Image (cartoon, rainbow, N blue to C red; front, top):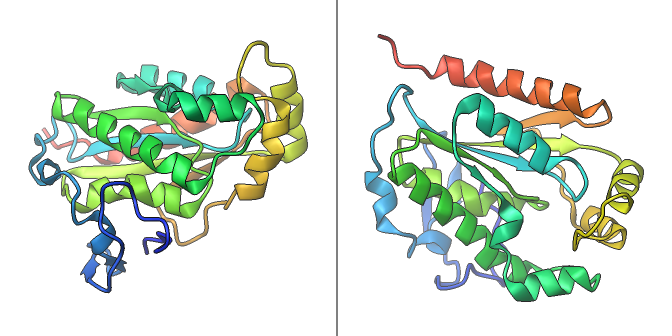
Length: 233
């Protein structure tokens, strides 16, 4: 079930009302927060070798290894890679550089930009995309999920890289020249809503193991799902 806050609508869209639609899996969702979403989503290019297009989001707090895992998956799947951090506004980057946590309002434009860029790549002919996005809260994940409600050919997956705050503090402190400092890790954990059991589109990977193990585990789980979606010859 989509979990938008009624007090913080997605930019450019109507505030939520009581309209209800079904998401195809028996759950009901509010239709109003996405009523102005790009109508082109309903007519995307049919997939190639697969039954569906796929958006793979590698998620988790700063320092969990999103970029490394996403780049590895993009190579394994031969899909475009989208670096989520590069879509933050200059104002967002400046806030994070100064150690100021982003608010929900700061993140809406970023999340919708990632969603639209993903669909742009798919409409351009790709079977799917791999992107990095912290997606700390359920409602942030829901912003991306919106795309699949308008496209029967699209499946969205989240690869949640799970780690302790202590582990990520150590990793981020060792970074050189990145705007996301160690002081931001705590604020991200304060916002973090780990995926719930009813979020069936989430794959969890424990990043307490060495990075090569994380990449291998993530790739194996992704390939298992992709192989099930290959069209019969």
